[in-house]
Each structure stands twice: as structure tokens, then as C-alpha cells.
Length: 520
Image 1 (cartoon, rainbow, N blue to C red):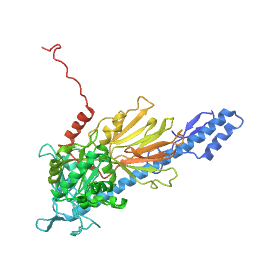
Image 2: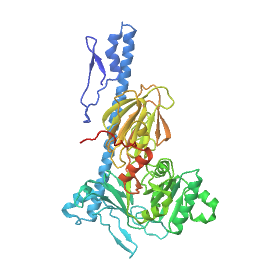
Image 3: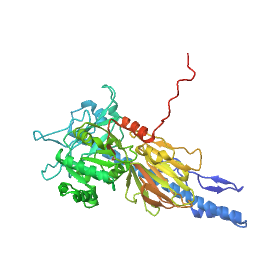
Image 4: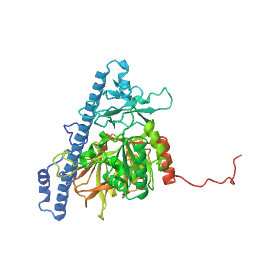
């Protein structure tokens, strides 16, 4: 709503104007001085009720001004992100066209939609030759270590290369032309999610494996030592583990001196340049921990089930040798699980770019009331559109991979992990008509604590890293460009249905008896 003026009869009138920035429905707000001038004649000589009304009008004007400023800032931020994406996409297209001007001919536009290939040279280890990948039937990664130039130093560990392709029903299907997958320094990034099953085929053999384990479990510790020994002796691979795990292995035997680890956050940030494959031993929480270690590109993850629930852990540890042998040989089906990129913007920030360090979540970000006895009051925007005001216990913004987690417990729907979307699920709303939503993945969501909120709100990211949101603070969420590729036991659909049948006993009931009336 817009600020009100008082006409000669004492009634309030609304005033709006068309802005110059081209965005519709923007507000033309009066300053506090103008409000004073408008209300001063009416206030003089009146009782306390009109004085209270004038104070309320000033508060409304201030709140509306804040909302309009926040909306304009969100629009500018969304436009800037879109511009950066278009520039990056145009640069990739130009490089591809310059490298192979006559490869596709008139079908270049169709080919680029399905196969954006970074044109760094491949190393054919069999004959020592360099060759370009053929991007017609899939997406190829490449070996690049620094400054965009291929480096082939025997002292350096080179990442394994691989190719992604889509499995469509029917050889004549051209649906792959509508998918966009690009690569940056040999790592997967996506601009749009593929809705079809994705297959990973290694172009060169993996050399380095990172093994992550659930802590404080004797059975997991024994299995980890056994797996590390097998990967070293039988597969001749380099092994990385966490510092805690390396201490445990060396305590057991000095044989594990070959195991490598890291010392600080800087080395963790460079893990994706060294590790070809990640094996997790635990439940879904271990997969979340593995994803949180990689702030950018994520290597393929092979999740083994050693937890209570396993929506993302389809592999069984009893057959880990056969599973890892199959994964290392390839090809394997993978699920690209997208993550949300979250920014906390404080009210004291001078502009939208003064944000705290972004946080990536694989399941969900939750905004709740914390220990306060008051209802949470949140204002929600989707790009440049106002969505709703949330009054209740809180709000969940979830990925489709996290649809079977907190969102499901709060009444949200179960969604296949490869369906592109962001789940918008209220927690115990104070309105029976407030039902969950599923929004497209390309939108930017902004959740702000209004200035008239009775209390603070709290944001948690995948169940940890809780941050307090004071009145005026905002949380901005969008889909991160780096997905988490997890290996499938069969394929993404089969694994999804198996997980909800085994984990939730979904729609399990006794079959009706046959002793009732029969239709003749």
C-alpha cells in the first residue's frame, strides 16, 4: 500500500506514481516532513486519538519506504546476477565458436544448447598425443590446474577427466538440445538442471579418492581402515582423509603413512583441484558434511549407508569392493543435487553487496522464532514480486534433495531430486490457507524481518551455523551454480523410490481381502 493523504473531509487518500526505473508497482513515498505538514492542521486542537493516529501514519510511511528501498535493491541484485550469467555464457559460446568454427556448421546453435564444451586439450596417455574432445554425444571435462593453461608436470597430481551424457528414451529424441551444462577448470557447473538421467563416463582413470567418515563409530573406523588399504593395494590410488581420521589410522598402524590430509582452510579450498572422487561412510549427515567442505565445484560422491535413514546413501558397505570397482570403471548414473546459496544482509549495510560470506546448503535454510514466544514475522519477495508475510513458527526454503527432510516434516511435498525447483514451506503458519509452494529454480528469494517485528528471527543452514536476524536484516537465497553429483546404485528415479519405500514405508498398508462382493 502507499502512504495516505487526508482530504478536506478528513478521509485518507492513496497516492502512487510511475517510477523512472521501469519497474511497475513502485511506491512514491512522502517524507516524514511532508507527513507532518499534512497532519499538523488536523492535529492541532484535537484529542489524543488523532495524535496517536498521526504517529501511526509516520510509522507506516517509514516502513513503506524501507520496503520500497529493499525491493529496488533486490531488483538491482537480480539484474546484476542475470547480467553476469549472460556475459559468462556469451564468453563460453565465443570461445567454443572460435576453437571449432566449422565443426557444426549451421547446427551450431542447436549443438551448443546440448553440448557446451570447454576447449582445453586432452591428454591421451596411451600415445602421448593431445586431442580435442568430441562434444556431440555428451559433455567433457578437461585437465586444467592453473591460469587456464594445461599443465603436465610429473610432480603434480592431475585430475581425472570424464564426460556426461543424457539417457533419453528413443534414439531420435532431441531433448538434449534444451540442456545447458558448462565446465570451469574441469569441474561441473550448471545453468539449468537436466530433467533426464545423467551418466558419467571417465575419460581417464581416477587417481585420488577422499574418504569421509561418520565420527565416534568403531564399526565405521574399522571399515575405513579396510577400505583405505584396499584402495591403495588393489587400485593404486592416492588417499585423502580428514586429520582426525589420519590420526586414528596411524594409531592403529604405521602402515597408513601414505594417507594424506590437510592443515588449514586454504588447503580445504583447493581440495577440488586434487580429488577425483569422494567416498562417504555414514548417513545423509555425512553427505551434507562432504558437500559443505566444497564451497565451489564438488567431485562425484559415492555415499555408503551407515546411518539410520538413507535418502542419499544407496550403496551398501557389505559390497563396497564391487561398488567402488564399478564406479572407478564407469559409466555410472549420477544425480546432480543442487544447493542453495544464501547471503545474510544486515540493516547496517550501505548497499546490497555488503553481505556476509555466502553459505551453501544442500537440504534447506530455516528461518524460525528461536526461543521467543512471539510469532515470527517475515516479509517474502520472489525476484521483484511480493509473495506474502509469514506469521507462524517460521519458514523453510528447501532444495528438492531436502524435500524429504525438515520440509516434509512441516507438511511439504516429497519431490524427485532432479525436478528443478525451490520449496517454500511454512512452519506451523497462523493461517490455514497458507499452503506450501514449489518455485522455479532460477528465482531469487528474499526474506526480511520487518521493522515492526516484535522479536528477532533465527536462520539455520542445514541444521547448523545459526545466525540471528534483527529487524531490518534480510536473507537472500538463490540456486548455487555448483551442484553435488552423487552416484546412483541404479538410476536417480529407482534410488528415490527405494529410499522413500525403505526409509518412510511410504503408503505401506495391507492389501484388501478378496472375500468381498465381486463385479460380474
